[in-house]
Image 1 (cartoon, rainbow, N blue to C red):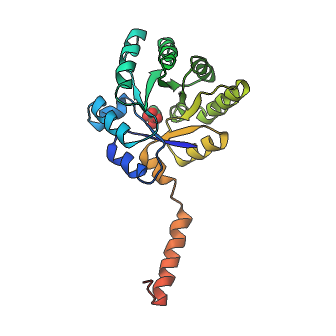
Image 2 (image 1 turned 120 degrees about the vertical axis):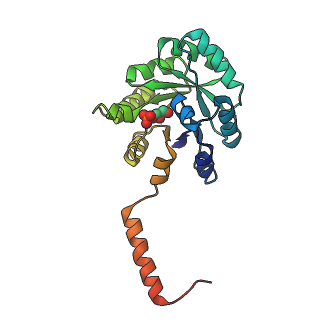
Image 3 (image 1 turned 135 degrees about the vertical axis):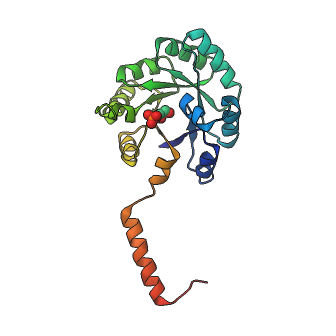
Length: 217
Ligand code: G3P
């Protein structure tokens, strides 16, 4: 399973990237706002740091605007994945831009039928938003399972990029189902290392070690 980091915070990406934990990055207009940076400038900096795909989102809502913005974003670096919304115009732009050889991440997917359309439009990635379905008391993981089944039934190569990941269980469950990629905020990725029994065990070992009076030198 590939780990993408869902942020435009360059320092946070660098910390995880130095550990070899970053297979790609996803951004969106809200994350660009949060970064306080210029979209082209910060996206270029991320692309220079990370080898894998870096999703940069178009904000036009019409086909012509998406094509124009997509081509502009793609010029930032070779590893740009153009992010387009799951609308009819977005699917049309997906077909055109993937036909030109660009990677496309179709975002804001909330149903298996939407994911089916994105695969047929040639999307490189489909981004189902787990957390936002859970917010409505729906089971986002059911959607990941449905998309996995449909893509496998027909051999679609579009990668399932589980997004809107909010906690460690989302990561584990998406991995068990076989999502190709998860994108999660840096804090969620770092929290995968946490376990209360690890902390408790370490405390006990440290207490006993102190009693030995030894040092390792
Ligand atoms: O990249 C988009 C997605 O991951 C957003 O997550 O937490 O804002 O629903 P969230």
